[in-house]
Image (tube, rainbow, N blue to C red; front, side):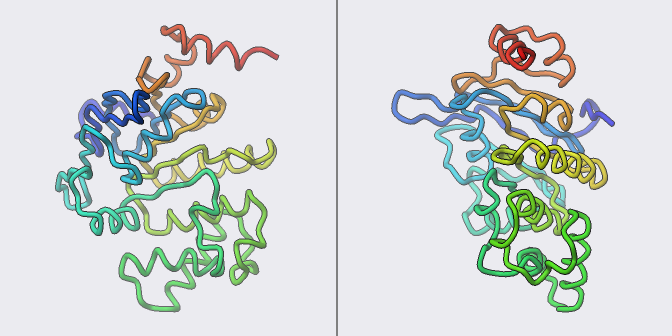
Length: 263
């Protein structure tokens, strides 16, 4: 089900977010809103600024200007750009999640698969060992990892299995917003397809709000409701996913779409 957000307050509002490196404007006054249950895709070629934008939204990078306003579970509006670091970190462990392109950056490689999931439950106050282990096992099953691998280290897993474990680690706390940075990058085509099917199922089942950064139009076609096209640090086109990809208006978007159609 598509969510237009016409009759809802935005869950997340980005206003005039900017980040420069010397004379290079990686993000130039970016503004948009994200609504509950919506998947917002951000596409563009390498160097377009999309990953920098995601890092500024998460707080991994400090924006030069602009505001990231989030409405939390208590319906309190929070400005993440001025939020103390300790509170931002807590938020990222509870109400937000970040799926990294390289799952090794989103996992603790020195602890077991079950412990990776259990750590997030500890962050939200769960202390009962039996409950933690049971919930970890439940999530391993949801992301199609055999339960007998629960006590194995992530470094013994394939790349696709590591990415599925990262999803389980993040989703166990039922976050309200999930940021995804090229989540299928570096995986072979068959593994990508299986992971995308799983992600689509989880997004719809859990009613997740997602910001998905990718250069792959096939990924946004499968997952996104709305689309933002970035080029040289600026938003050049935005709208419903089908409208943007089937009837692109900006020359850069037309170039992106046509390049995917060439055999």
